[in-house]
Length: 252
Image 1 (tube, helix red, strand yellow):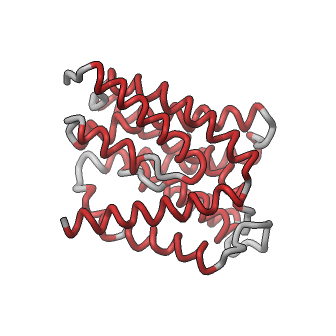
Image 2: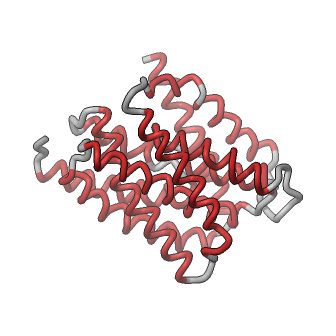
């Protein structure tokens, strides 16, 4: 489809802001998907184009963390594969089912995440005792979140981060860093499916990839410097805003 150059440039700027927020707390799709729809991109093409730009952001943040040795590949490799496979299945399924059915589940999950951090303000400050074992987390929790991301996407980073804190007892900074690797995997799998399906709007996607990469680079450094005190309020805010958006869509 044809998009004017000013719309393409604006989408790139939107992606920069989304990449920064997504790296800190997830929820970048809350900004980019509506922007694509407002630009006149059809829903399935909007999902596909959103993934092609999102993979640039998560790749930037993941490679930065690995290069700075804040993450070790040997420790996150299995999580990467589990997230990749879950997302690939989700991206295949979304082409045959109505993704709007997720509107029943997502508000409940978003509300639960926001309440978790509001009612347990010290959650994620330090490592605690895990509530589930590594095998259950790797083979059940991570693929399910990956499936959701391949099918739809917004909030995936928040889901991964909160799952790391609540289920694996990780400090929020560590959970957020691990979430970047898993989110890169889910975006990569979805991109491969969507590219071969021919649904990507490439001009918009390339502009947004550049914006996402810049935003993710800034966000990664903000995570490292700001820690929990920066991530937690943004994470709660993103969940509440996304929750408000879903209710608005239902009532509007």
